[in-house]
Length: 96
Image (cartoon, rainbow, N blue to C red):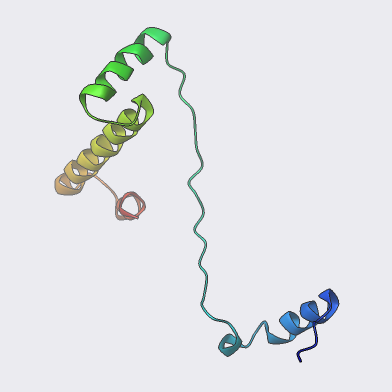
């Protein structure tokens, strides 16, 4: 019969094994979520975007805007990369 460990015994066991990678099942990596921002759009524009999002089979107008922005930024980066108008440090930041 196994003895149930108290909370303090569990804490001590974890502390003792914290640096021993063989004691852990897997390595967990946590990525930071990008910081969200907001845009202020007038209600007329939002209504138009809602209609367009249905036409483009998007979940909503915000998804449509995000897709458009992502596509436009990717196109701009490709054009700037091809034109050699970027410094290498700027290019690295855009491609990461």
